[in-house]
Image 1: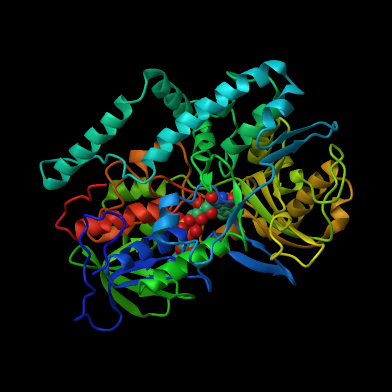
Image 2: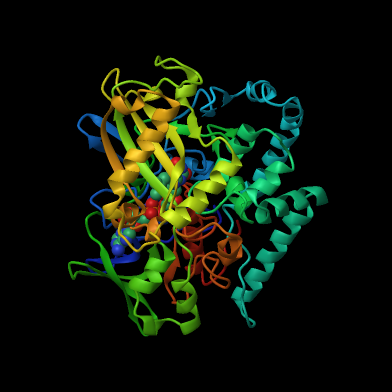
Length: 558
Ligand SMILES: Cc1cc2nc3c(=O)[nH]c(=O)nc-3n(C[C@H](O)[C@H](O)[C@H](O)COP(=O)(O)OP(=O)(O)OC[C@H]3O[C@@H](n4cnc5c(N)ncnc54)[C@H](O)[C@@H]3O)c2cc1C
């Protein structure tokens, strides 16, 4: 009998032998990394699990594809840090072929004036001092505060948040214990630490960073993390949280750094799919789910777009909760207030994503040279100040896209020779801000190429000659992210990471424990706590909730 590592106290459930064909213990809608993680844990516990994926490949937003002959890249998500070490361990992802390497420098911020800031292990403070002695002196204290606050969040990502419950029941009692444990955790923290965490949950990134530093480039370095995937100005209250969200990760045990999965982000989900398959999980691709089936008010399976039905008493949805509740279920099955709130679930990152095939590495005016150097392995941020980011947001709101956009460029082929032919390179461009829906009502189909040209021209201003090095490109507007990956509004997190949609309010007060309002229906994707990013955490936590419910409603002890 297999024992799930979710909780060694959880007694594994044997596979049901008497079930008819096309009948499973659990059906998972979507083979994104969270769907695969959830499936793998449930398979490990002995459940009969089927994953049905709409696209021809598994991985959701964490995939590698050939986008130009001979050039492969991570198509959407492009860099790894948040992937939880417990998930890596439990799913034995390294044994299933995953290798994650560190960048040689974390970030490089060139300016058009010929200056640059390089953030790299053991060098950042020295480089900050080139701009401000005061900032260099404060840097270690800032770093320590962010480390400590990130550790608080890290401690919570594999826990279901305390969930609002009413009445007297076993469930209420369980939630009471959960809330008490959460309270005890917080009480153990020094008061000043709690204040810092509170600041990071509520303040704007600009407010938080301006409390520490004066240097524009240094503030831009951290400000970028606050607006990435977040359609907001760094002056918007709550954006400091998104900065913190990007700080709870680690690479090979080193906290808060970002790295590269050899073979691209698809290597993560390929390893997850292998892990799931090794525990008997069936994965079928190219089969969109049309609807979740209900019988007598509870889930009884799914119907695929081709009309096939798959029966199961548990369905876990890896899709955006708005997509699930507004298009896969009959509206009369849901409470009116619930449905009304779900329709207003805020989705829409201001992101535009490109993959480029390059004949050579860029040479930046601020640090010339096309031979591979440490800064070429970094996240190259072209956005020199918080004010610039603020203007980019306002421009996108009024015009549809920033005419001076914020771009992070990553050139993973500097760390990985499996992606491009020898001597050539691939670049990921992650560009903000663009309006998820254009203000004049036109379609992104009309503007995709104009905006793609603008992005390349913008990089060319920092690295003259860049434009002529582009051999081929793949362009993904918010509309493309929605149509290709099923990301509602192009939202990379399955719903904005704002205080009203976080923690016990993700996706809604009363449903933060991965269970939906319909019996047997669970949410295992990024629309659940702790939200977006390639973490595996919602998939892990949802699997735990499903397993706990099979133990007569008793919550898992972890
Ligand atoms: C452009 C971009 C850049 C990003 N960069 C990073 C990054 O560098 N690092 C990072 O950590 N995170 C990044 N993210 C965020 C991260 O990729 C996502 O938050 C995360 O991958 C979401 O994972 P998920 O498993 O919850 O959902 P998804 O990956 O969205 O998977 C959901 C799956 O459900 C499937 N599906 C949808 N509808 C149906 C249906 N009807 N039937 C069956 N299946 C269906 C989809 O096809 C998809 O495979 C980025 C995201 C994007 C889009």
